[in-house]
Length: 122
Image 1 (tube, rainbow, N blue to C red):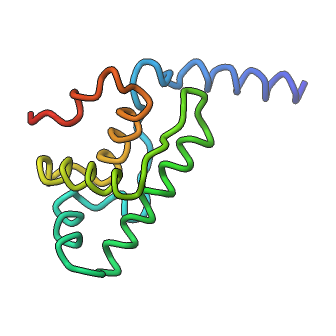
Image 2 (cartoon, helix red, strand yellow; image 1 turned 180 degrees about the vertical axis):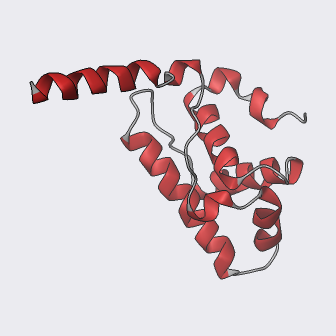
């Protein structure tokens, strides 16, 4: 009986969860990912800023987790490539969260055919 209740709850939960193919779902963002892109840009302008290194580490960790928990390709990109992409994105969208910028980078790496969609100005 207990197994049936757990299975039913799991099915209801899965049915209520939006699929990744329909877009990204809303998740609680923790740590540096909550910061806005303007903060990213500000820290990146300061040579050897430990806050910039912390933000970079957060982005790398998030990208690693995205690879670990997805089946739709990986996010192979050089450190320099990731930093240039994030810098450009954040300069264009200083009010976006670092999380959103990272999520868009991941999408672009996994869907190169849509590459221009996240880099164009709104």
